[in-house]
Image (cartoon, rainbow, N blue to C red; front, side):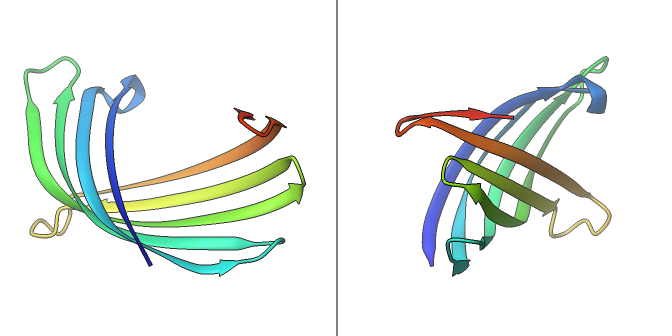
Length: 116
């Protein structure tokens, strides 16, 4: 089990998000770490401020964040990651967000990677 803290600023015109800012912390559980497969689960609490495109609305809330990360090494310099998030406002049952990311990590040198 590890402690983690994070912050993020993003935009997403497709979702009509002008700016989403968040800060949070939580715990991470490493369940399996092998050469062929690894996965990590995490739970955290974050504060979010979200400005919408085409309106003056700014939504501010606390959200719980649950995530699962699966790491699959393909070769020594090539790894594939799958990450899924479920973020919800604990006191508003129908206010939630889900997302899914897939990333290919190509290690160029020991300190330089290229992500797709």
